[in-house]
Image: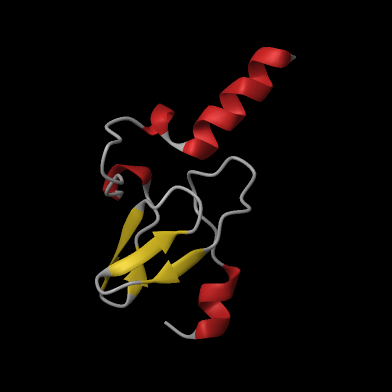
Length: 76
């Protein structure tokens, strides 16, 4: 995966699609929530079912981007 392609990717868990992804040893890491997405056969797997949650989070609703989106929804 080249840098141009990587620069276009955004975290699929971020409702605003603002969080970028960066490489780490075994895949891609979200800049906002620190979720880890695997890379298989050279392709990123950006499927929520495949995500490795950051330590201390068990559910997607606990992620910073999801909490912010839920707060905005409740204000409307």
